[in-house]
Image 1 (cartoon, one colour):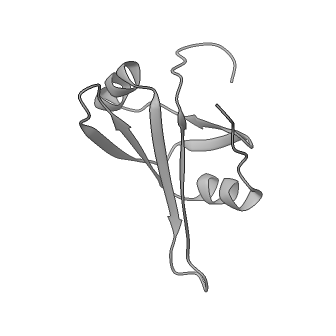
Image 2 (spheres, helix red, strand yellow; image 1 turned 45 degrees about the vertical axis):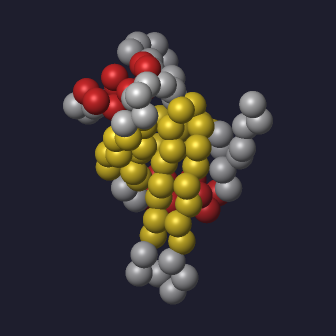
Image 3 (tube, one colour; image 1 turned 135 degrees about the vertical axis):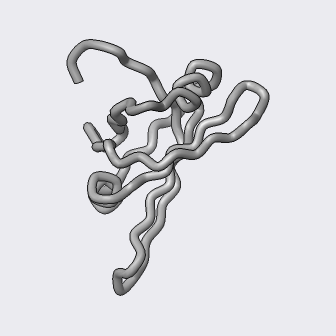
Length: 95
């Protein structure tokens, strides 16, 4: 699977705005949650801090495929992006 690189503009949008994370269960039921505790840690990786993500965590254990959406409205030229990828759950260790 080819890894896409996030531009500096996309990384800045993610680091400065609420992002929506979409997951699905094995039976295809979607779940979307707003994420405020998210940061880019490279041009192809994001770090999301788990805060009461019971359904999200369950979905990720069943199906690691995710999508995030971030948008900035109210600028001269509004922007929005959707990124797709796979998630991994870490419970300890260095970030």
